[in-house]
Length: 113
Image (cartoon, rainbow, N blue to C red; front, side, top):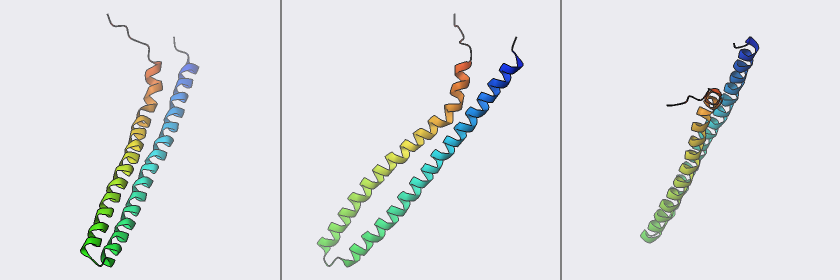
């Protein structure tokens, strides 16, 4: 027989776990939004700087050098930021399933015959 107090405590634990997970989820989501914003801002600033250097270049060779430098740094920045944001999404996925860990762990194991 299940006691009412046990049921209430279990419900309270689940509620507290869900609230904690929701807070963690929100913080990680905010970190993703901030990372996207920072990357967009940096990309825009780098693009402006590239255009200024390109316009200021006096020869075709210098323009080609500026273009090559911009392409290289843009690619490196993209890869680094993609990995960073990808890691944040992995963390978000883990946090999405966190509330279910306690629930699944408390279920009685079923024996398979």
